[in-house]
Image 1 (cartoon, rainbow, N blue to C red):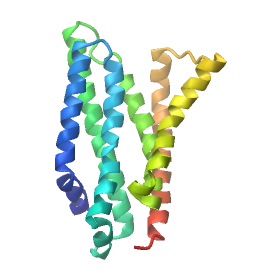
Image 2 (tube, rainbow, N blue to C red; image 1 turned 135 degrees about the vertical axis):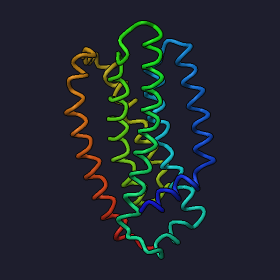
Image 3 (cartoon, helix red, strand yellow; image 1 turned 60 degrees about the vertical axis):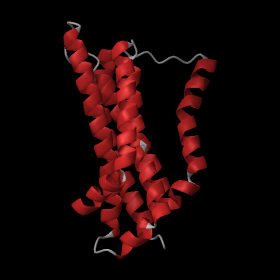
Image 4 (cartoon, rainbow, N blue to C red; image 1 turned 90 degrees about the horizontal axis):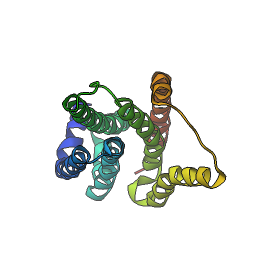
Amino acid sequence: MSGLIKNEFFTMRRVILLYAGVLLVYQLLGVFGTQMAGVQIFSVFFCTMLVISSFSYGEKSGWNVYVNVLPVSRGQIVLCKYLFAMICMAVAAAFGLLVQCVLNGRNGIPVFQDAWVTGAAVIVAGLFLSVVLPVLFKVGAEKSRVILVLLFLIPFAVVLIMEKTGVRISLSPERLLSLLPAAGLGTSAVVLLSCVVSMGIYGRKEF
C-alpha cells in the first residue's frame, strides 16, 4: 500500500512541482493583496486536481493495466487514489493556514482569525472529490472530461440562479465556525461512502 502511494508521488513529481510553483505565486498574491480567503479556497481546490492528472497519466502510460497484475488488491488501488488526493489537499490547506496565521500575527490580529475559511474549503473540496473519483474510476480521465466540466459548472450555476432569483444566505463567520465540526463529520461519511462505491466500480471493471 505504501508502495502505491510512493509511486503516485514519484510519477507525479514534475506535475507536483509545477502545481507547487503556481500555488506559491497565488499565495504571494494573497500576501500582497486583500483576497487571502479566495486564495485559500483556490489553493485547496487546485491541489485536488492532481488526482485527475494522476488518472490521466495512468491511462496514457499503461499503469492502470500493469498495476492489476501486481500483488495488490483492487481495494488498495482505489484507497491509494483517495489517500493521494487527501494528502495533496491537506498539504495545500496546511500551507495556506500557516501563511494566514503568520499574516495575522504580523498584522496584530488573533492568529487563527479566518482559519474557518480553510476548514470550509477542505470540506467542500472533500465533497467534490467524493463525486469526481467514482466518475474517474468508472470511465477514466479522458472520457470523463465533459462530466467533470459539468461538475465544475454546477456551483457557478447555483450561485447564478440565487442571484437572479434574489435568494440570499446570510451566515456570520461565528455561525459558519460552529457548523464546521458537523459539516466535517458529514463530509467524512460521504467520502467514505464514495470510496466504497469506487471500490465496487473498480472491482467490476475489466481491462
